Each structure stands twice: as C-alpha cells, then as structure tokens.
Length: 537
Ligand SMILES: [Zn+2]
Ligand SMILES: [Zn+2]
Image (tube, rainbow, N blue to C red; front, side, top):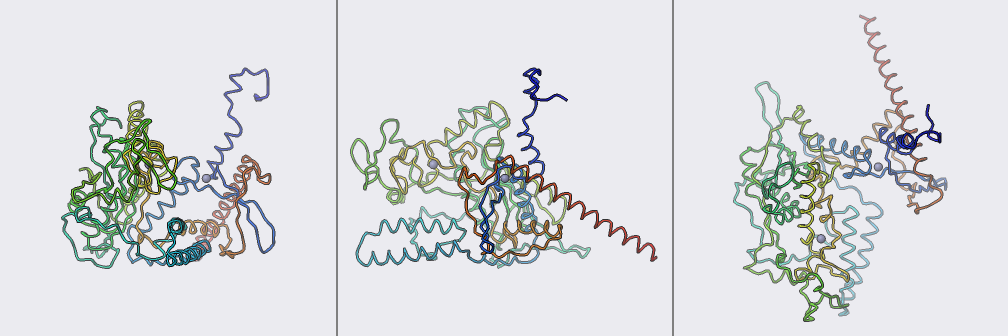
C-alpha cells in the first residue's frame, strides 16, 4: 500500500489521494450527520454541571449542509402528506407562550405606558414610537402572530381607485369548513379528490435552454418586478380561490425556480374544483403594486441625495428635503397608476389527485424536489444561461425591493426608516442576491389549517419514533431544567470540528446497529409466532 508521507512518491500521485478530512465529511454526510453543527453550552440546573452539546445546523434550503437539508425535506414531505386528504377538521390550538414571548410582551407594556405618559405631557413620542415598532417586530419574530393591540393601527386611507378590487369571478356562499367535497362511488367507497395546480408567470420573451433567444427583446424589468412581487400574487390567488370555492381552502405550496430563472408555484389543494374554474381564477387574478414611480432616475453617479442629521435626505443641488416614504405614498392620487401589475401567465396546469394513490405520492415528491435548491440554483444551461442570470441581477440592482430599500433614493424618495449611508444599488436585501433572483419570500407556503401539526411537531414525531425503536421512552424533560447558552467563537472547550464529526459518526453507527438488532429481534419474534401458529394448526 502506498503511503502519502512516502517522499519517493511522485507529487502527482500524492496529490491524487483524497484528504482524510474531506473523506470524513463525506462519511458524515452518508451517515446523515450534520456537517456544520452548532456547539451550545447546556447548563443543568439540577446537577449544576454544564456540557457542550452539538445541535444540528438545521439548514433548510441551502445545500451547505446536505444531511440537514435532506432531513428538512423529509419533514416537509410528511407535513404535505398529512394534510392533503384530511377527512376531519384540524383542531388548531395556539401553542402556549414561552418565556421569551411573555418577556417581550411585558417589555412592550412598559413602553406603552411610557408613551402614553409622554403623550399626556405633550412630549415628542417619535423615539418611543420607533422603539415600539421595533418591539412589535421582535414580538412577531419570536413566533407570535398579529399585534398586541389587535387591529388598531389606522390603515393608510386609500382612494377608491387604489383599492385592490376583486376580479369578476363566480362566488359561492361561504361554508365554515376546510374540507373539500367527497364523492360516493357505486362500490360504496368514499372518494376524496384533491388538486395539484402549477402556476407560472407570463412570458418575457422566447427562451431556449433557460436563456432568451434575443436578450435585447427580453423584458427583464417586468421579469424582475414579477419576481419581487410574486408572493403577493400567490396571496391574491388564494383569496380568489376561497371566494369561488365557498370554503376555507387549505394548501401546501412550493415556490420553485424554472429554467428561465423565474419563480413558479406548485400547490397541493385540499378539495376539488372544476379545472375550468381554477383556470378562470388564475386568469382573473392580479396584484397591483401601489408604490411611487421607479422609472424616472433623478439621482445617479456623483449626483446623490445627501444626508442631514435630524432632517433626512436632501437634494444636493437645491437643498430641498426629499419626500419621505409616507409623503410619497400620500401623493399617489386618483390619476396615479400602480408601479406594477403582476399576473400569472397562460400556462396553468391542473391535475385531479385521489388520496393514497401513486399519483398523490408523485406530486408530493414533485413538491419537495427543488426544496434544497435556491432559485439561482436552476442554473445548469451553460454560458448563455449564466449571462441571462447576470442580466437578471442587473435588472434587479436598482429595483426597489421593499419600502426600506435604498434604491428609492435613485428615484427621489427617502426610503422608509431612512438612515445615513444608504446608497442605491447597494441594497443588502435578499431579493437582490444571485441565489434569490428577486424572490425573497418563503419557499414553502402552508396554510394555517393544513394539518393538525406544526413542523416542530412533525420533528417531535420522528424523535419519538426513534427513541421508541431504541426502547427508550420519550419522556418530556422538565423544560426548566436546562439553560442553553451560546459558546463564544474560539472557546477552548469546543473540540475541533473533525473530532466532533468523528464522534457523531460513531454515535450514528451505534444507533444504527442497535436499531438493526431490534428489528432482527422483532422479526425473530414474528417468525416464532408464525411457527407457533403453524404448530398449533
Ligand atoms: Zn447541518
Ligand atoms: Zn432592496
């Protein structure tokens, strides 16, 4: 056997040998071990001891950690299967609030009191309002829905023209169910048909192998704006779908990249509607983006708005203060046109699916197929497609991605929550990045009453299954027993990654062996049971 430290070996031979460390990562992947584990310090308040524990990175859509991405994909498949053909209404009970959530709401209450006192005293409340807005965002980020005050914030009053009007569609009387109709066959069976729908954006120009035939004629601006506002269009589709269907339609959908680098949508829908109606809804659905204009460039190059503390951004030539986001919205009057109107393309695919058929399984596989890839990952068509992606990024570079996008300065408007140092073309928002290509929304969209379980509960299911198979009861541990703390980077108590990976692989092998043993024992028992019945007969 050749040894890599053998100096007599030609350099080329030595270099052709794999690095042991790379092999370790490959082995870890094969065993389904997270390759980018996060070390956390777990303090046991009963025993007073602490321990460093690796938790999986939980990578979802990126392929930086294939084992975690794969695990997430499996969970999503389970979630999709669980809800599609439900035959009883799911019971939705909100989770009990956790400590962090309670703390945030208490903190929010303090600020509410301070604000009320300041208002009474006639003081400026701008700063307190900013803190409260931030806290409300934190509250939502901590997994709580809605606003603590309920729906009290006054909606910006909109002129009749700017209201999103409902398209002309048939409307059924609303019934309070999330379940679709069932049909009874002559064989006495009950059929629970559902739908699998694919919705696509319109054409921006002819494409071949994922790249435009004539790039100059390809409508990049429209493609960019459509990608930016795609999730809103999906929301509208669901609203219209529910109105037409006359029940609380539930769905599990995946936003996936097409080869031409536009997002499209696969949607499993519980219950069924005539195919023609789905097509009619898709054709009638549109979303208007009521944002200020972003077509006429007012500032570029060296001619840029300047920041003044306490005032905001000014026109560098005249010293005039640029309109704020709110002011710009207020000037959109009766004659204003929406910045953008987005619709689906003509390509609408509707497939009827029956519960428990191979077709249903095929659709579920299809729904999760691209989950571990980003929109930009659809790139595989070579040079022409790479250039296409670059042009798409260029088109997105100066498109405002949100009210807070620095690109608004280019069009003479102060972005919402403007702060110093903002530069058009330098927005750090996800939508402008090559892996997102305009679509920064969630890749999996699941309606609230899809199944009885949240993703966390599906995770718990798997854990319980494994522990049961290992003969250990999954007793809920005392939630207050452990305190978890982050481990600072470079902490000497954290072993090198390679050592931790080796341990995890070993652990996994032990589990596997144990599981196999249990399976063999179970099979053996079954066999002897069969033998017993055989003897008895
Ligand atoms: Zn991982
Ligand atoms: Zn942006």
